[in-house]
Image (cartoon, rainbow, N blue to C red; front, side):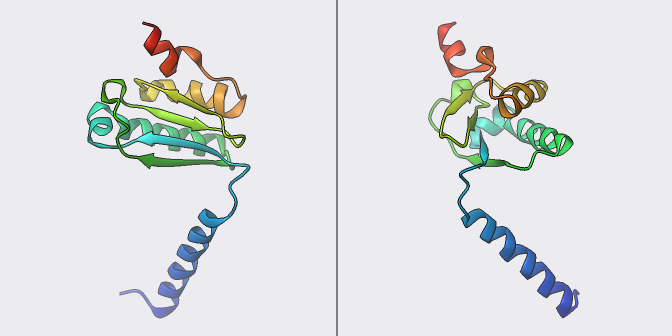
Length: 125
C-alpha cells in the first residue's frame, strides 16, 4: 500500500493535469483519433501510439493527442483530425502508423497538410 505522502503526491499531480485541461488551449494543436469500434478494428490503436511516440521523440510541447468516437464514416477509418490553434481542421483517412512521421513533420511542425492522405484526396478517387 502507498504511504499517505505518496497518495497525496499522486492527488496533486492529477489535479495539476485536470487544471491544465481547463486552461485556454489557444496555442495548442490537437490531434484527434477516431477510436470507436470501427476505428480500433481498422487499426487506430497503433496509429495513436505512433503519434504519441513521434511527438515524444520530437519533444513537441504544444500538441495534444485525444480520442473521439465514431463520426459515421467507418469506411475511411482509421481517421485523424489535426486541428491547429487557429481552428483549421484537416482530416486524414486510412492512416497507418508509417504515415505518422510525415504527418507530424509536414503538418504539425511545418503547417503544410499532406494532401494525398486527406479526406479530400480519398473522395477524389
